[in-house]
Length: 101
Image (cartoon, rainbow, N blue to C red; front, top):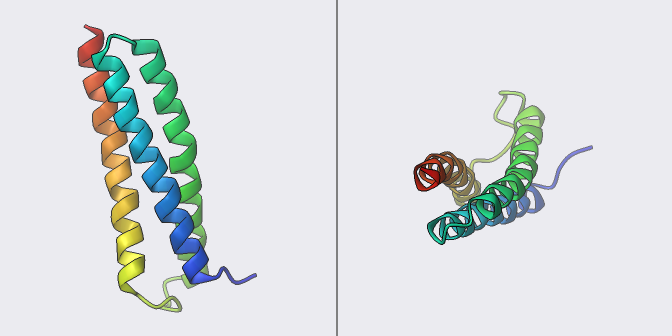
């Protein structure tokens, strides 16, 4: 079954954006001293990141390295969102460890 490109891109953007937002909520909680809440928010962020990554993987599989998928500005935008959210997740984890000290 072919995945509709526009729908897939929007799913990546929405899930990656939600993951990123939760990472920043986690940082705010940690700054307030709520380390356990921060960790729970990161776990929630991971769920959204997984969904975004799964959709990205489906698109890659559908493309099969044969340039079947058009490279559009919105596709690049979705990839930016996903990569930014992944970086936010990694950095949030490290910063929360520092707050925990």
